[in-house]
Amino acid sequence: MSSKKLAQLCITFWVVALFCPSVHSQLQVGFYRNSCRRAESIVRGAVRDALRQDRGMAAGLVRLHFHDCFVRGCEGSVLLDSTASNKAEKDSPANNPSLRGFEIIDDAKARLEAECRGVVSCADILAFAARDSFDLSGGVGYDVPAGRRDGRVSLASETFSNLPPPTFNVDQLTQRFSDKGFTQSEMVTLSGAHTIGRSHCSSFTDRLYNFDGTNSQDPSLDSTYAASLKRSCPRDSTDPNLEVPMDPRTPTISDVNYYRDILVNRGLFTSDQTLLTSPATASEVRSNSRSPLGWKRKFAAAMVKMGRIQVLTGSTGEIRANCRVINS
Image 1: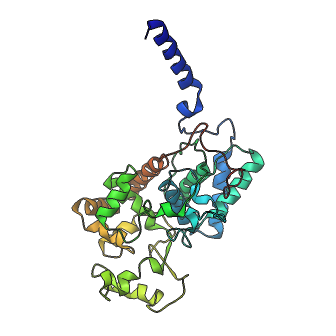
Image 2: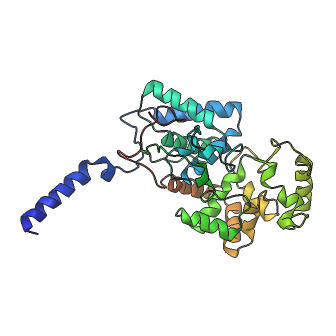
Image 3: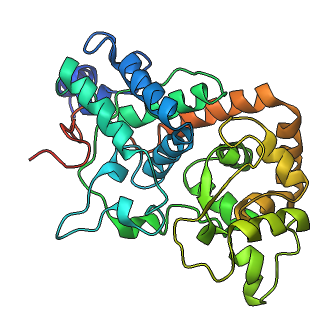
């Protein structure tokens, strides 16, 4: 190749890199500063209004963002409704009926469309709403880099190989989070999201009545706590709506009681209590239990990192007009 052609190629590449959105675009704090100045405050208003009605929705919104990012990346696919020809993520057993907060995202989107039509993505709304939920439930605020665009595909079948179930042990959890780019320490940090919210009995009753197929109770479960759970979740109940708080003491406050509960064998899920079975993760649990502000700051940093998983930016994807359906 001649030096002249090489120079022309370099100039062409520089121009493309500078002006082509698919190459140059990256997530950035204040992404909507010029295009929709009040975007983040509008989302926060919708979240605050929802939490006034039900403080438990904070956990639902954090979980929505997590379940979005771990399947196809943070591109809003968890919000899409199923169609006659496709079962979407939200209708997978991993998400239905436990996943909540869709109406809050709808409300935030409607408010944004009224002010800045076609500007703010559903994926970014999810990221903002998760941040605000953590902050308003006693966590800390943090800057959310934005600029995500929305995907057009949602498959229930993809949830099984991407979302960690409550039955995972520490090695399985470590691998699943590693697959998404997280360290084991970050896995333990993000597990602290279980400090708020509620769980359906079906997610843990195997620990009460049939642990490892033995027709007995999980020996790692505190007996007094187990007795309380059995009262809330009777063996023969057929009610699919029975729930218990993830953290019995402060179920609507983002604090380190989650880790303190694990240390006294009161982790609700197998995937919670298993954090004591590895010296490294047990050390993280003890460290987090002693450092409320330190855990909150680590959690915020891990959430920002999670919000970057496989994002669509620039000209890829779309900005949905309705978070439940792709644009026609």
